[in-house]
Amino acid sequence: MHELAIAGHVVDIAARHAEGRKVTKVYLKVGHLRQVVPSALTFSFDLVAQGTTIEGATLILEEVPATGRCRECGAESALKTFPFQCEACGASSLEITQGEELYVESLEMEGQEDEKLIAEG
Image (cartoon, rainbow, N blue to C red):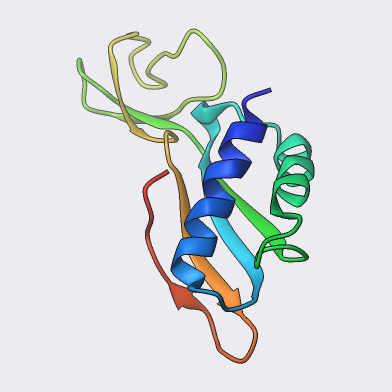
């Protein structure tokens, strides 16, 4: 259950950027290839956030689908199941172009609109 470790990093990042302000929402982008279980991450986030300025904040997950570019024909394919193959030519030599993301995109805090941030994940 790596979601607990991920939740710990998300809470740390949010708290650091909030600088003591009360966070109400945390927007997180999660690539499909990260194999994160949303319910486990949300549960872990609520648990880890207890006693911090992040406690009570809503974690909003945006799943990013996986895609890849074929090294043989150059076509872009959706990557849904293993083994990954090009939808155009069937080749298995693909460059991952999307789906490995994992980062805090923005925070919403009491008394202000969204604060955009891109943080390491």
